[in-house]
Image 1 (cartoon, rainbow, N blue to C red):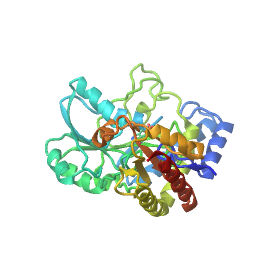
Image 2 (image 1 turned 180 degrees about the horizontal axis):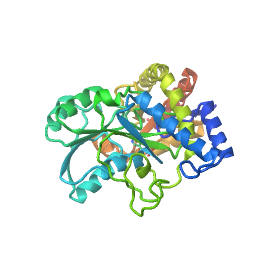
Image 3 (image 1 turned 90 degrees about the horizontal axis):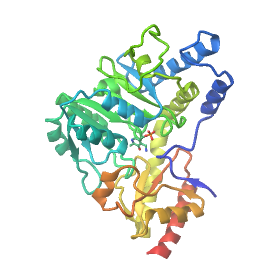
Image 4 (image 1 turned 90 degrees about the vertical axis):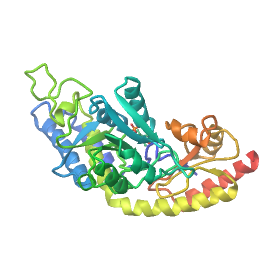
Length: 375
Ligand code: PMP
């Protein structure tokens, strides 16, 4: 039996449309937005179709634009390095991934921003009243909706309301959030949303995007050929072309339309599945005597340890039984600082849309055998 429980790193399931779109693009390889022949034009149109689909699904039609990137990390870098002018006070939380924290700490070390990082509570959640107070002093607020380590969720609608009332620019890290948490870009006042294509949207690694509210002053990170204004040596700054210099991953983007379409359509069923399976898993892990770092199960992400056993050792024992999980520090140092697990790490289980109750039973039995050995 093989059980893949590492979907927060990258989702294993890809809908058939993703395979079909990628293979079609490979068979008709052409450089989108550059040449004028039919296949090149068609590849460009497929990219436009993806932008339109994402904006519709995220509630940003007519108000926001999509810039394709190679990852959520690149999208977050663009949102921060491309937007911050210097002198801003930025608010974030200790639940964030290094894709948010490292750009912020770099900007802080360059003395470009001042930074406030809200600590988590003991259950991993962020205290909304503290966030409300801190937002009063912030120019920019940047948060994820789901912590990639513990699965703790942040109510994006509530938080957006608070920070927008204080006049902050709001940036959301959607890597673990979309489409599990409903995002309505315009209604919620979200200025920028960074997202990965290869996680909850069931597309390919090497795809990501930044959605930007029209009119947001942004500078490109990457300079080069855009297929536009080619008589000039100066980088255009029109969104999206000016921000997508270089040959694009048109096959990945065409596949992303299909992955995203499937994922948004199935989001209600996915939420239900994750809640049911994760609730049971939390119950089982607790009964076995594991240390749990996840209080809620809605996101399908659960972090635990078995006694003081190294998380890598536990993950390797699970791997030898055909169960793929992730161990270590999950690129989120401030979560491990909070829970005292910088040395031990945490074992993280993340459910996928194909995970079954039988998979979870197999997993719980394996953990139980390891615990009998280790505890
Ligand atoms: N933010 C969070 C919360 C994540 O979990 C990840 C990926 N682990 C990222 C950002 C970065 O995504 P990517 O690796 O696709 O750049």
